[in-house]
Image (tube, rainbow, N blue to C red; front, top):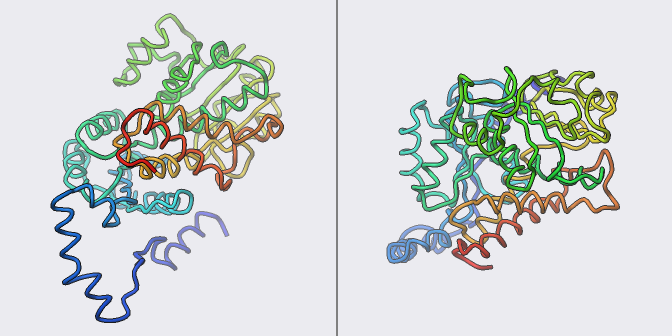
Length: 392
């Protein structure tokens, strides 16, 4: 059976993948009194006196909401809030499986950023963190920035940061294998949407200095018709105004080619023109810029995609469960750039020098070490930065 049909059949059979389960068994009248009236009054009063108790006395302390307006769902585009629900439900499943984080899918039926922001603000007392998902750019930047500033709990737009962290981890491990330096490597990022722009930004924060960002018309410049605030920041940061040319021209002699763009755009000729021991991550989903086999046939030393059916999966599943697990463990008030860099280092470090290979620069998402390593990195950085409200 085709995997898409199987997904429909299984969801119809189970009526979705999520349910509500109780941690406390109601066996008799005493249990009912503890769970509800009269016992429930005491935790209410304690939270009234100290709101922070809500993280310890209710499910809130381990609960994230995955929030979307359905305007940029996977590769499907603007399909609406209801149609985004299967993705949010699936993401909730991943939070629980890989990070033991409880998650509620929350789709908001609006395209107005102000309405979405105000809705999340009104609901924040239910959650310990907010994961934004599948929101179109450029409004995704405004929404995240506003919520980070106005909420008391961490906010993380996974489409921006999760893929960037995973990509940086893979790049760092791959560079160890080919014995090149991040600072001097020639890096080309094809695609300047939320994921591509943040990949370039995080690479720069990690120390990379020779980065070129491309859009369909060529190097990202100030005259780009859909220029947003982050892209404008990158133009200055990376001195992109001094660069020119299309993908084929910029890929010549490149050490690293990263794709978050369109299917099939990494041709054999483009990849063959790269530097020796080239690294190519084609992360467009579900159909990458080049398949794993195509990249290897073109002589690419280290190849990766966002797919789970080929080696070196560069995917945010390796990131977000651990990020929120670590933030919740110490009740961090925000998720910082330093946490993102520490997360990437933690993932890359899971592959030892002895284990490094062309087909092994990224640990599997099913590697049980991944989420705990990311969680520890995030929690340690929160404590170091003084934004942890609870020390384990």
